[in-house]
Structure formats: structure tokens, C-alpha cells
Image (cartoon, rainbow, N blue to C red; front, side, top):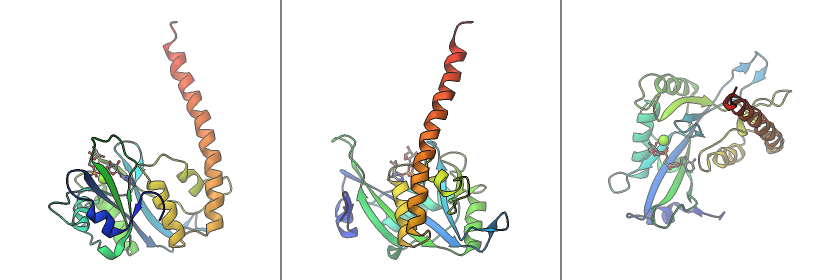
Length: 220
Ligand code: APR
Ligand code: MG
């Protein structure tokens, strides 16, 4: 097993005040729609822009003493996307220990689920998450779709993967793309290589932006 990875039974055995559990889910559907009428979008995968400016999957903390992992996840989904969705034990794909912060903090165990929906249901989630969902505009700034194609200029998946993600959300995404064969492994490898280049360019952009604020602070 990869480092930090736990079986579901091992994860569930981590109970009491020394552990906290958080559950997140990748909701996705097949689609026949095309970008610019020619680039197949193939799958709609939902992620969210979080309050902390990071990309992540919907979900959150579960109160293990009062609810099952799946009941907690469904409650979080109701708050964050505004739709009652049933996610079951069968959709559980991964559990792992998050890297420790301090010995006095409870250790976080993250659980990851993958759930395939109909395109209609995904659209319903998108609508509700921006209107009736309690957390909209607060803990959740908006739902986003993951582009799975790469444009000629390296846009799409490579740019998306170069953003900042919460915890291990980027590896959860990449692992799911591979496991479900939503993107061919070689295409994903190339996208990640391009993503590293995009990331380096972003660092240069940030330096330029920083220089702007420094120029603003110079006494005139
Ligand atoms: N991988 C690892 N850790 C993750 C992932 C992920 N993919 N996604 C989120 N986390 C971590 C977060 O850093 C957080 O510590 O799991 C924990 C709970 O996830 P959230 O979705 O942030 O929890 P939620 O219950 O929705 O939000 C409640 O928790 O993040 C804090 O103070 C913040 O108000 C927020 C509160
Ligand atoms: Mg959350």
C-alpha cells in the first residue's frame, strides 16, 4: 500500500478524539458535448473553488460518533452542492492519513469516493450549488468542471493541473482519471509535463505582479 494509505477497516478503527475523518467525492458523468463544436469534452468532472482559494472536491468533516462516513458525506454534499445524493460504501475508493501537523492535533483521515451520475444530474448539481446550496459564496466559491482535453497551446488539462489544490486532491484527481481511464495514461503524462512548465511560467508571472506592488510602495 502507498504511504499513508489505509484499508477501509483500518481507517474505521481510527476512532476517538485522536482522529478526525473527512470524506470527499468526485462526481462525474459522460457527455457528448463538444468544445467549439469539435473538441469532445467526453466527461464532466466536478470540483470546487474553496473559500481558501484552493481547488478541492465537495465533502468535508464527518462526525464519526453521530453518523456513518457516507451519511456525513451526504450531509456535506447537501450543504455544499444543495442536492440530496446517495453515496454508498461501494463508491469508497481510498482512505489515507493526511500528513501530521502537530502531535497535539487530532490526526486527519481522508476518505475519497467516486460516483458516476447522469449528465442531467450533474447539471442539476451545478444549478443548485450556485443557488440553493447553503455554503454557496461562503465555504464554496463555485463549482468548476475539469477540462480533460489539451488544446494546441497547452490549455485545458495541463493548465488546470497547474493550479493549487487542497491536501491530496490533485493526486486523487489524477489517480481517478487513470483508474477509470477517463484520460489515456500517455496523454495524462504529457499533460502533467506541460503542467510543470505552466507552473514555472506562473511563478514568473507572480514575480512580475509582486514587482508591481513593490513599485506602488516606493515613496514618490
Ligand atoms: N485531501 C486531503 N485533505 C483534504 C482534501 C483532500 N482532497 N480536501 C479537503 N481536505 C482537508 C481540508 O484541509 C480540511 O482540513 O479535509 C479537511 C476537511 O475538509 P473540508 O472540505 O474543508 O471540510 P468542511 O467540513 O467542508 O469545512 C469545515 O473546515 O477547512 C475547514 O475551517 C474550514 O470552515 C471549514 C471547515
Ligand atoms: Mg468541504
